[in-house]
Length: 174
Image (cartoon, rainbow, N blue to C red; front, side, top):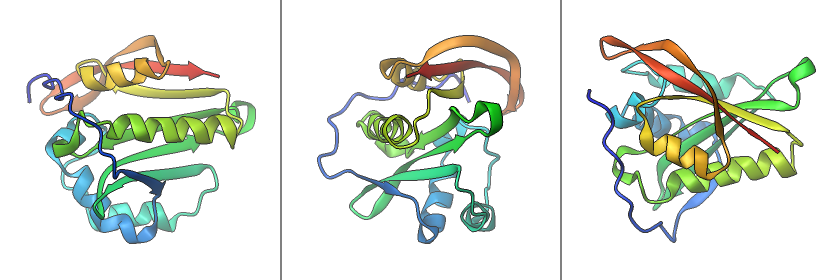
């Protein structure tokens, strides 16, 4: 796949709901994460199974928080926040994605705003960090909009679609 084309900038959905992910969402999330554009921006392998998604819900972890974006009873985005432990208990890493057909409609912004609110106002986290492929311009723009800054670049970070790709390390401090 070539560099990701920029997402169209459309109007946000007035009926978008952000809520906690629940075990009954596993099938819808499996469908979501297997979409080509969604997967292209993540470290997920193709053909993720329902069993793999379900396993995330069966492993209780109080440091893991998952949110979904729902519209008209369809899950169109997800974000996860994983709090670190020990001397890094003030830090969490995040990962997210939006349904291919709903990119550029404010879904990513709504998910990121919700997880930042959770981190700042409920978990007292000081630092949020993530990695993002250098060719994912729409994600880079979204993260910058919310105050994330590039702290460095990982060369040959991951093998994707037959070649190695670089990724930026980004973080946001409260």
